[in-house]
Length: 307
Image (cartoon, rainbow, N blue to C red):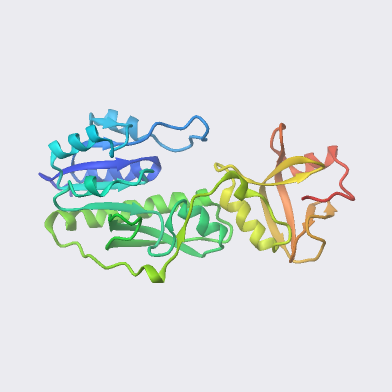
């Protein structure tokens, strides 16, 4: 049943989570007066939906300038929103702006808080070999991802999942949270559960260099890195004969071999600190992505070592 709302909202949003949560609010009849989003970066692979296009389709005013800029603070103040909601918005929102929402400012974070506060929580959870994560709606305070929790939904991480698989499932979980929580926020019955920061952890953003493979780590650890940063992310990489090689897909196996040394060429298996890594998809710098079998037809690897 669609709810008819008189409450005014300002929304900060980006990415698929931003689009999905806005669509759910609109389905429930929410009165979104203004959306803040981002310009797409020319250096980033844009594989996700556009909040700007969504705003245009629904005739909602939007801005790609920071909500923290003085003129935008004035715009928000004139709207006098009841709620300010943030869905994968990439800027920290200033306390001055947060205070402009009379009934509170809330954020949808891509982890089961207080675990994985901070940046790129889905990638970190996969890289660290977690078996579950989640979506959490919480009140925003000056400290990032630290305000009272309103609602959460867990998301399973299967051993074969990539970060994209998890992100897609997390997007569905985010919609579930908004679907059941928005009516409670409207009628004032939504809970506020203090966050125990000591029970969680904080993760920073990732740089391209963080994708470098350390072959002294176990095959499972390397596999987790690969699936945590594979397409549409920049990928985990190594080098072979002084050329950068991105490994897009692999699988850990039992076995033994010197770290980085090729122990089998058919299939392509490489030694690690513990176990073997079987590589199936890779890409040499400056060349097209290829299957290992096609790669092996052109390379002599019997004494090769990845570094």
